[in-house]
Image 1 (cartoon, rainbow, N blue to C red):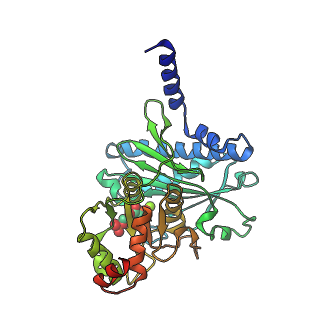
Image 2: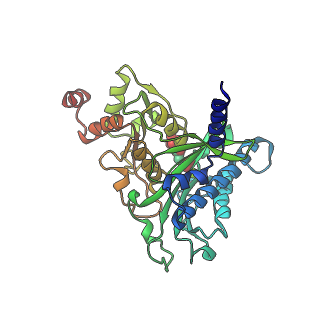
Length: 354
Ligand code: AHM
Ligand code: MG
């Protein structure tokens, strides 16, 4: 290789190694404005939270007080894990004295957490699920964190945070962290979807995949089929349809972030539908479904409740839930077509589609 070529290759490799999260945000916005600097600093802090959580998870089996339940039940009525509490506090801690985020709202807290010293400056709110897929923690399988950034509207004097009860298009940024064999942070600020991998030797998230696009159709269907008996007939018909076709494969890991990460690269659909008794399903709109829908749309996919685009759903309360069907555009449309045709027989639905 000529000296010049070698120099160029080395320069490109170095440039890539230096593309950290905060630098990437500035590059995406083509700006050093104060808003660009704020978003860059927010992403940097989220990266720090992810590193702290990843560190604790990687040593969980060796440390006291990391695994298992706390004995408490959260606002969702679910048993709280020690790791849920730790991760929840990590996000609060990294934003203290940052001047960046005035409120944090999480799945684990009934009301938002206010950081008064940030409020005169920080006009952003962080919404997050600190540990997604908590049931995987104790068995050393992948879990995640999900986050969403919204700009505060109004002064929120009464502490009711009513401005958060708006649709998902109000999100300024969204993303998730996947704690797997490596720790990966995927984010979007509305300029595509980008993935960063934590390099443990540097302690930095380095750009690993830029402008991710989800395939228009894929083989994966990802759903907890143990709930089949509780579903509406239309949804059972979709599952029966998939069972009878060539080209589908089932994958379900118990942590939404991992399942959707797979769909980003291989295509397909993830479903957490409602049941006849609980039509709203399990997943929380503001902390789980809306941020993932924002990412999926940015990657060329879609997210739906079955009858409405997730990004158009306005929550009634902070902890509202909604059914979620998310992934490749054609696969989401296929599920919707079954749901919207109601409880016709499988054969009638397939005929109507053809
Ligand atoms: P969590 O945030 O309390 O862990 O709940 C969300 C998780 C998702 O990650 C996952 O897809 C789903 O709950 C699994 O639920 P189930 O065990 O009912 O299939
Ligand atoms: Mg959780």
